Length: 371
Ligand code: ADP
Image 1 (spheres, rainbow, N blue to C red):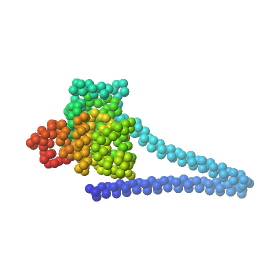
Image 2: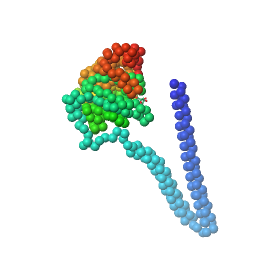
Image 3: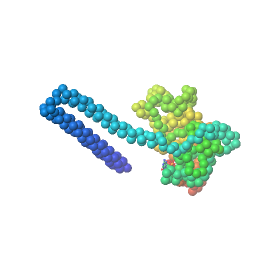
Image 4: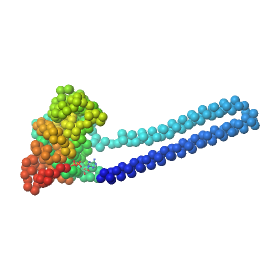
């Protein structure tokens, strides 16, 4: 693999080098032609001027004045042409930017007056015991890849659910549809009894705390890296989020605690430490539903345990959707849904599925599979 990546990188670099060389050569040729034309023009004028001085009694003063004005006119003309060239190259850049800006948004937002009130819906759903999340006969495909066909399922409020299954089986797409990163082609995705399309997009997304597989760390202190999730949060709230996410456990190892500068150019953090910062960010946003995309690579033992404890605490108070890649981390969820090619092939408690002889989950556990 390494060799083929090297080869591809080499050939791409060579193509870029050839293109840049070609562009520079063409530019030089054009510039050379323009300069040649200018010199020939000036030479002709000097020649005609000299002849006129010799044979037609033109004074050298007149010739000198004429040549000076010619030079001024030529340099203005050349600046004007240069500006034209710059304008046309800027115009093509501008066209590309405008093309992006005017592109239709895939997930349109309703006008504010038509949006359902998400907090009201949440209260009503809690009182009526309506499912927190409901996928109803959903069909969804990315351009040419069909993921869900007539997919239905429900999640109760407060439930913690692990989504397991082979890579590419549709687990992440499930959460992307919830957050409306994409809209379904048919059927509906509902949150608190309303179609997700009925809510204001921003309001909808603030209900979710997403912990991505790879948390981006920005250059700055640990504190600012957590606070970025909600800049108006109080110090107490930031401290609490860091405590819940077990960020505090590793602050002692950093020379300046939460004031240690991390990120590119600062102190490097391990994958487990980064993910704990990701959890703290998600918690700081005060979400109802946590979507936790587990890291695919193995974490150090301490981080693994700390994250497990953090998630167990969070499961007590939140609805948690855990996109699980390592089956050892999901023992304490209420429910496991096994995905296979966009279908839920098994659904039940960890214990029940683990004990099901010949079951898919049972086999995954026996083989110690990860996704
Ligand atoms: P999982 O989380 O179970 O690994 P995903 O939901 O990420 O699976 O992906 C399901 C399938 O959809 C995969 O085959 C993946 O290549 C494809 N896919 C995911 N995102 C996109 C996208 N933005 N555009 C096109 N295909 C995608």
